[in-house]
Length: 464
Ligand SMILES: Cc1cc2nc3c(=O)[nH]c(=O)nc-3n(C[C@H](O)[C@H](O)[C@H](O)COP(=O)(O)OP(=O)(O)OC[C@H]3O[C@@H](n4cnc5c(N)ncnc54)[C@H](O)[C@@H]3O)c2cc1C
Image 1 (cartoon, protein in one colour):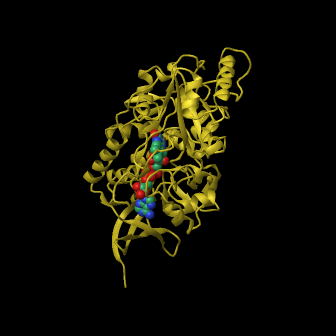
Image 2 (tube, helix red, strand yellow):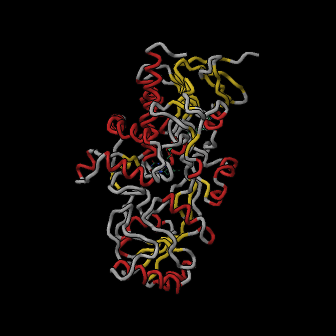
Image 3 (tube, rainbow, N blue to C red):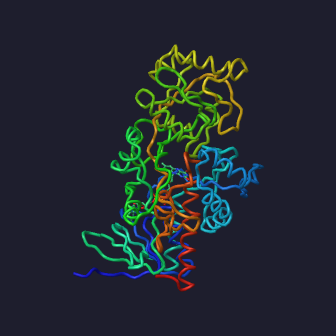
């Protein structure tokens, strides 16, 4: 029996920030585009995210007098990523960040606050209401003739005799059909935080983290590309993000980074075990090694006063309202309420305060609040607070090798013609750890690049 065939210029798989940036850009370029999403709703992990985009040299930074540059951004990306990042991808991001930032603003993105967060040495996380932005992108896509199909799961890439990817087989309601793509297929199917099978293969210790991320993020795009010989990068760096309450549930994003405001992190023995200024992915790896995979963010009234109401990761009041914060007038009472060894906590805070006052070095080597920036303050003003938190398996940040044109490369580094990838399923960009805002950022940047390259190929008549 022959399959029903649907013909398009570009077929985009996955409707998160990467897929929607690619699909909308391709539709704006006049291409006939299908956006296929396997679940019943648009957005994937992107719609669940904190909405931070990392850009440098922006109007928001200028308005707040923040000194930042593409060079400093690059240095931070390399130091956070342990220097194993793919430089060509970083350069592509930095070269395209201004244009992408402006395009997102043209789509109605409102960057309502600017924060310093994981891996940054200048406030670079621009916060949006991400669901609004995704809705705007989708409206532009539809207005430009784009077609969206929910409940359509891509299952197999199709190649010509010459080895060019010419389409994809898609399953919907038990029926398979073929979507042909004259200019190429763009994979934007996200990571595999929801695949026990792939986590067991690449990072079994991370199965102890709280499962999270988009329900459809099971690595489908990776597996489809692997069948064609695609290469991979960064697979050994998968880590969960620290710190979410142990009861964090499916649909609600609860994550507090009070450590970048001055909290320390202790285990149940009241002992510190990691430099709290590091990337929250690095913290996640270390917290998983502690008893019960649990770390407590410990802070005082001065840190509590730095809460940013309504801003993810920084809203201490919201966590308190949820009843997830322990509070007490003394450290001893706090430890007893939270189930931490009281003598251990008391001694740890005393050592920390002494080192902040210049008496002895910090026992875990911490010198600043976040990535080399911000002065440490003693924890000496009650009331005191403890937030029990575990690592959250939000994202995998590794996968397909791509070049700066977002073309997928095979294991030998050769282009797989007609196959593009953007977003969380690509590897090489982050390297060993992740800087806040660079995943939504790279989804938008490389989604647009993939669309433009496909459009240019079609215009020059070299499409398959
Ligand atoms: C709680 C949380 C907070 C975060 N906060 C931030 C932040 O503030 N800033 C930041 O930069 N990053 C953040 N991240 C990470 C970031 O949100 C993701 O890495 C990014 O959104 C991934 O975008 P994507 O488009 O690649 O994939 P997704 O947004 O996950 O979209 C992939 C889509 O593909 C679909 N799909 C999968 N398989 C198929 C198939 N076979 N056929 C068709 N469709 C398929 C999925 O159902 C999904 O809808 C956060 C993540 C989480 C979970």
